[in-house]
Length: 445
Ligand SMILES: [Zn+2]
Image 1: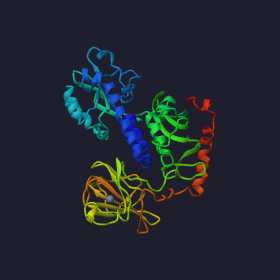
Image 2: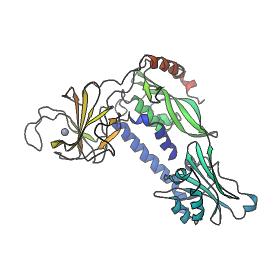
Image 3: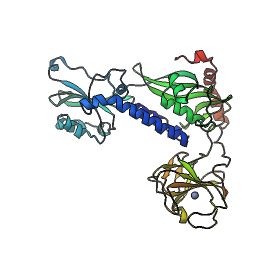
Image 4: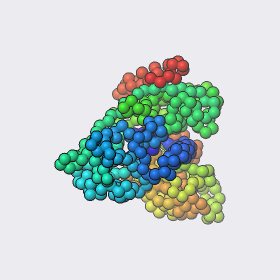
């Protein structure tokens, strides 16, 4: 799973645009992926738990997780004794546990750990990480592990003791254009065009502000995506960022161009430099249903009297993440009467948002903190006057309540003069690629 994880890491900004339905689709596809991987992995797990032979065919799914090219060659004089094994880190695994399980010399581990500057890259293990060890009766000869996509830690036993080095293995980005026509689902069409599921999801995220990918998609819709593919040592690792995309939905054409601002923040804009993203999420939570709508003259179910419902209730299981609807500052955090645990954010343009009945707040979130759109700020609960777990969400403009479902959401900040110039310079070649004829565009580069 490390490839998709690093994909997520390198695309943190995408998270901000995550909309409930897309998140649901992500969860579903994640489950499908997990099922598939469990199935694919199971034979190895049954025969030898957590240990796989070092030679994994490049075509096997596990190859994406386990880097094989760095497995050291066995010295001729050790050929009869030395063994190379690859360990896949399991849940709650530590190096100590792994060493004990495999009857490797823990004194060697202690010596390796004492090497300067490598402790963290050695000890920070994630389930699925691969570690290659060459040993002779448990005595360590070499230990190799990929620390990041581009760095591999290699420890070698020398005459005088262990020595460590970090090997840099840069990735190579290639630009590919894929195009497809939808005749079943977005995911199937994307797959037929050679795109990963992750990439299809990202495409949906980019246009999620304009297109409802559950309700609006029609057979015959088409899309073209210009994106990076990440290669290493000539081997495909995973898809990278989408640089440009076009989506024709029900005859209407939408275009998105990625722009990397000077501050390193990436966002998507129309060819005119207008942001695709809105300044506010329509719904700050992935909900199962709307359990109560905005109604200033509602009869209150618990208080049994007329008391306006000044927001929207989104039913969702306790613990569902609640996201900041927009960039802003925490202006209230604590108990607030019938709202139970509540949080308020102050945004620009006189807008504030309120989140009620929370079970808990995001860790380390304090009054006055700056938050970003899409950032998890709290979790759904049923504190205060609530008949079931849901998020009570209010949207106020200059102190006046608006219907969160209907209020016209302001667009995100457009690009300013000098940024606009560099945006046009960056995006011109991408636009040209989008305009390529379909049969040409479909081929890989
Ligand atoms: Zn409510």
